[in-house]
Image (cartoon, rainbow, N blue to C red; front, top):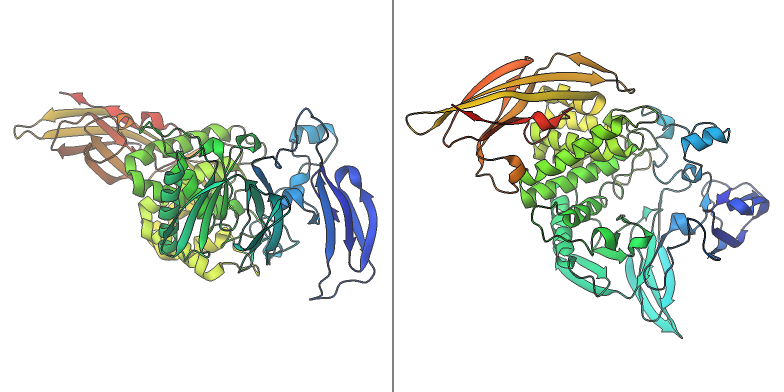
Length: 539
């Protein structure tokens, strides 16, 4: 079977050594009957033409990817796919019930080795492919596609471009065309470029900085960057507000990057963050593509989140990260109640965004805080070294956890189990905090805390268990909510063993304390992180 999205009409199609059998033009599905079965290693040619039809205006779903200035579409939208694509199924669970359809199939079990030879993202119709494209556009526009520009010419009122990739890539590529202005810089042999609307130049330099920082960090700690170019391309906001990573090519919505207002230093620099996240996908997806089993999105999205967080911390420091982690934590906790099927531990995530994005950010940040950034990076680098571009089999989260345990050592085995293989939540609270000035000008600080640990099942039922964790206790000269950079406000910060539900800690600090906290930087999955900080009572 061959299929495309509804609205993309297949105008004509031929298959060498076969003919069209059953067809359903309303849903753009076609069956080809082969005159003779294909043999191992044999190749045949499929020719097709596709038209994007938009006759008038519908109530929704109008074609907006081909525009007079700002075209962006990818092969999964515009080209036929071979086999069944479950993403084109009716996704709404309630509507499926009303229509009498069976529930959507769950992800394949993590231990089901039968699916280790299928891609989690692009199905089983192809693995890594060679890529060459010739595309034309208006004479005043620039077309960009993955690969490197090999030829460019003009015929009549059309401008032609030929791009060729010099290495196999995933069966995932896009074309963009617009009246672009190009800004660029070179760093360590990589040409960084930003293609943008001429009037949208406010954040271009920030994107170039983030691109350079990202490629340099990831190349140093994970594996060498596999391309000679890294390109960001603007597309119109009415097509969407997202960014997406294709091989050496990052379409980036004007709405979250090119027209973003970053003048307030207290705001999270999401232009830098999104750029770093998409750059990380050149490793986590384009070098490591997971098997079609549970946990696949952890190896792609969670790892991209972690990679971007390391860049953000390097750029802005721990205090900036606290606000980002709290946003991620609160989003995860708030989304658990709307889970339609079953919450999974992180290593078995079934494309549940609140888990692989939100919880994944907190877990990976905590992991490097406990075992060390270098240990985590070594494990990720080893995963690439062992399984980059692997299709026989594709990698799984079991591969990463095996390597991570080896790099971290036995002392962190329970932490790795809690973080990835279980659903563990904490309830940490400062119940009292006092300080008394000493005769030498220093201060005695007493902190009382309450701490609980729970395991949850997939339906959210929680069971309390004994707690025994090393947890940060901090003393500060001002509120962390008013602090965005630097460390002058940190009077004391150390991990302490918390192995009872109520505990008391005593410290001596050099300056007058104003706030104390348990897990003050939101590194653990705390059910209510708002009570982790408390103002100090001066006695």
